[in-house]
Image (cartoon, rainbow, N blue to C red; front, side):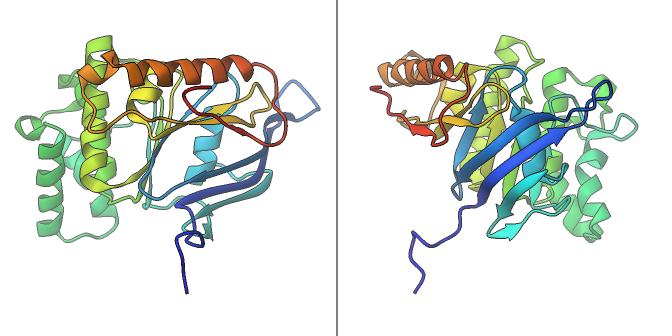
Length: 275
């Protein structure tokens, strides 16, 4: 009999180590070392840490864009081996095709997968509407603002029906107001689709606003230093940021990040907002 305790996590990272070979050195550079992490089905998990700690590398390993030096990454209990449409990825920089209109960008993945034309059109209509781009379907990326191009990225990924969405500092280049709007859009899409999300950011407040839990990585080589549950009620809105629960969560993450400036002990610390 299968119980909740035996159901595999949506993503599981086990004893993961990753090294790069710098061009100017004979010694490999260890970016991540012995990382263990589980991301539950349907959760929104942010990964945060100082620059160079391996956040983006960890996300790319989860997506199958890189092959780990050692250890395993499991998606629904199966090893991640290369690219998979079920593992959607949103990059920090715009990844839209500049020579395609919004609707053709959104349709690109389904077309490559052989989705029939009528079904593709339905997907384009659905996801352009979901991200607020119905009126811009025939526009080219050069005609759109940075925030609107990021909406195209989201629509294009969701049109491939991923069950995991991996996002690498997607709003880092946006102004404060546009960034807040995009954060709300991501939350709305997540609540609508129940997609599991792993979100890399360097922005503490963004991590708290979006997440069910925040994973703090240590200084390089990155390991899981702490996991902080975010006990802030949902649904969340702009007013959420003004509440006591939000302030307590920010303090917990801030203290964890301060403690993670040096590599942690092997076992990560599960913190509460009171700690």
